[in-house]
Image (tube, rainbow, N blue to C red; front, top):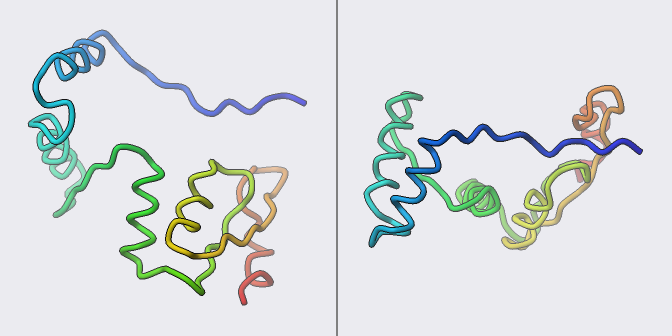
Length: 118
């Protein structure tokens, strides 16, 4: 079986210097760099509100919660994804429901989603 690459990052020397500056500062979390990032991302995307998270799992957890999902709700996803998709559902008491992928694309098979809705 040929492994599927998780992703490739592009990190240049400026990125490394910026991280070192934060690590050596008094603001490892919630400092001015977080505010700067959120402001610049809002300007770039035109978004009125921007909230950054420490990782994708935390962002999904917040999105599910903000969407009003909770116990008795189901989240349809594919098992061929990062564990955070299902874990964030479990954190709020929701149930992950799995739909297989299309072998050609690796994406969820949308033709099978409706039959999984309860």
